[in-house]
Image (cartoon, rainbow over all chains, first blue to last red; front, side, top):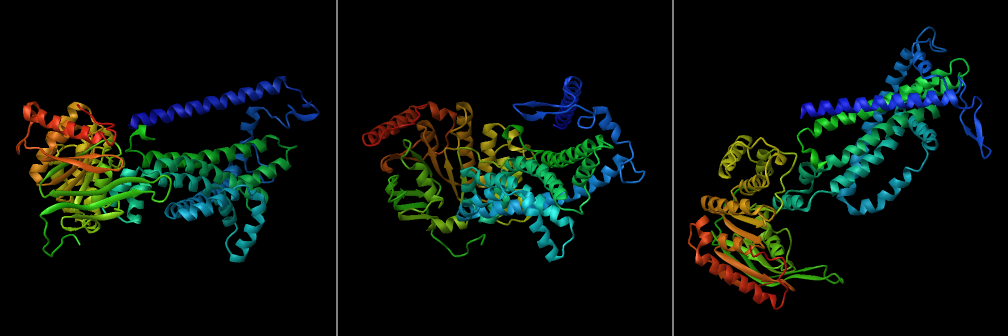
Length: 288
Length: 276
């Protein structure tokens, strides 16, 4: 099993690198043959410009990491971005943790009381149509009133995005327990809480994992959008905005920031995959 | 809570008196699953419930287990109301799908009822060892369920059902999903286990030879509404083995049960009865 796991991880990494390589090739091919000043289709300006400001060479983007960052003295871009990333990652993690607590809590509540599910679920779905940008100011005001540190608003907004897939997948899992398992617990005269801990949760795990995967990346997006919307949080989202305003002097910096954001998403996703392989280590692979 | 101290009359393992079960009453989907059923199972008996799909044999088993409450009538187990018997865990249960929890090892699955009953950890381990020996899988305790064959999984499920020394075992087509060879083997094993543990068994099946081979009495049921139409005593002697299956008396009883089922067919259609 161990060997199989390592083998799969290796194959996945190879595929990921191959896909990245293909994207880089496509980028360079378009840059070589596409129109310098872009183009129109039916009067819409949608064909991207290929000049160095809009589409820098792939190697320029990577070289950017080694150059001094604008506005950060003689610090290099990679080191500045590393600092920003660590800041964003911690908030995203806090957001995921908060989202998981809220998400699982709501799922348990809804699984326990049918009436809560009927009444609450539609509102949860509607909640996800509210743009984060619209919520950010209110969250900041409430945070200020409660006297909490500034990063908590980013974590809260990240949780707002991440709780939803966790709630939906956990609820589905808690409700998908085979009838015979529940009858067995009934025959032991086990209470609802005991059945939840001993049967419903363990059998919900395979359903919960995809929800957590979605939530992990949503959490990163939540933090980045918050950084862009609210001032004062200096993470990767802030870097993206900051660098795009200075695009004329160092165009490839924006892409470096975007890479950092993507890496954060992958790290959060990877954390979930790691816990998956730990939690599911003894289960049959066919059952998932 | 674990032991009942007051002396009770336990001559009858199961007593069902005038039990009826109606699902979805008052709606167009109303189903009369059981109508005025009486059933007595003496302690130490092996009783099979057989009949076509929809005859209410599984429902009757669930009434005895108190997983369902009858809409009318009374169910008593070991002389107490079925609800109390369930609270006291007077019975163990095994289903067609072994229902082992895939996140627990075989040993941990057997341990579950003991855990819920609050047994001491050392006693639990000891009992699990005994049960693994009883079902002849002494070195499979650390395996996960998916690493076991269908027959082995069912053995673990039986071990789990019997772990807390219940005097009564309720089984709902436990061997239905097994292949024929494994099935016959498991039937003999079950008889040995029950003899060794003095367990009373109520066994739901749709296989006539299985019912005849295992039972002291075969209860024939019919559908629409579900009811008991016949009860056949099977006198094949206390010790049965593979030779029993080839005796004329065995075939005679099979024919008797089949005819009883056919008689019940006049009112309810006999679907899903296996002749094998």
